[in-house]
Length: 391
Image (cartoon, rainbow, N blue to C red; front, side, top):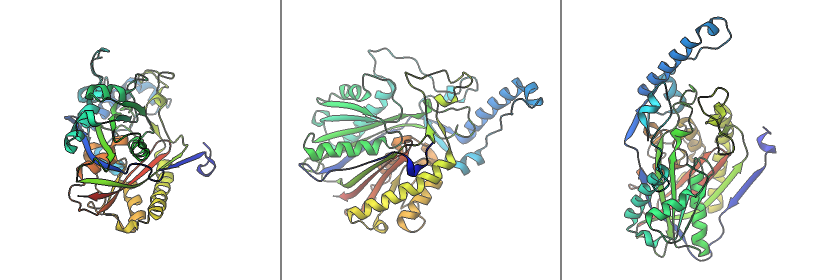
């Protein structure tokens, strides 16, 4: 990999107001009923490790194969801050013979799993805003892992909701939702739409290597939706979008090579890179300063004193990263009130994480309070959405 300063970099910034004024009218959340605790996950992984070590006992004794090391609750919580994660398919993930989500294949005349949970989150957002699906002009499915190449998941969600308009998929890994919010806001500003749903169904359990001790605890499943609308039609209580900023810097430090042009069974030796892989220490070292500086620069452009930010809804990937980023932005270590976490119970849900935090932790803010929704992850990609509460 080339050094970051020599990497190709691309930045986009939202355009000045043209026709409409974009706001966040509502958000929606779908949470799977099943959850896996760290204790359950560790028991499953260690049972797999025992089996693998027993099967390779002779090679291990000869020094030809390294034995698998046990995982532990202490290791997981120290490394990530995660204590549990919601999943769509618990039993197969915990089965040492499978260790991957499984569900029955659905016919082409049935709604897909990813669209189904996206529709649930979208309906929740529409209900919160008192909006009818026929009032929505567009659906953006913004997520890390698409169930198929085509037709677009967004169009399936659009059809299931009964929306007469258009939809398309977009993938910027963990920043997909914030990139989707800016895209929706730009449609509002340009007058090309009045109401846009940004839906992020994240079944991240499917791209995780549950047999890798260093990452088997990271991800969980969820779906979120954000309704971005013109202020002229928004509910009295909404969030003004003060400004958005997107940034990408190419990096191989977080990667997944699985795809319809490049795939293999995760059970096959030598195909681990077809699932989630990362260089965690490099990611931490490179992303924290990049994101913190991006937030400070955008706050300055908008005339916002970062110390006046009432709340930071940060990407829920790692507690240590969030702690350092919020400290650099606010000038002090953030309290749970200033930078709430959902990482402990949801795990890393990729692009949905910052939206879950916003959805669950914004009702107590007062009119005029300013906050920040921020994502960062593979790409590298990062997105900021500065908002102010109205009503």
